[in-house]
Image (cartoon, rainbow, N blue to C red):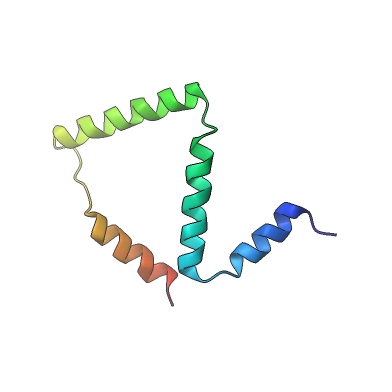
Length: 77
């Protein structure tokens, strides 16, 4: 007999791509509420480092629209 997680995972994998994205977004947002302070501090440090790298010209960003277009191209047949 499959566990609840196995059953939910199987059902989630059968969803259309856009519904999978919506589910993933919901799960990520709900996980944010359970973030521990140490993890939160590590992310804050990472964000500051990335902003500094952009400000110093060591890296360049990618437009949101380009990222989403590429993601949808991979998810939508």
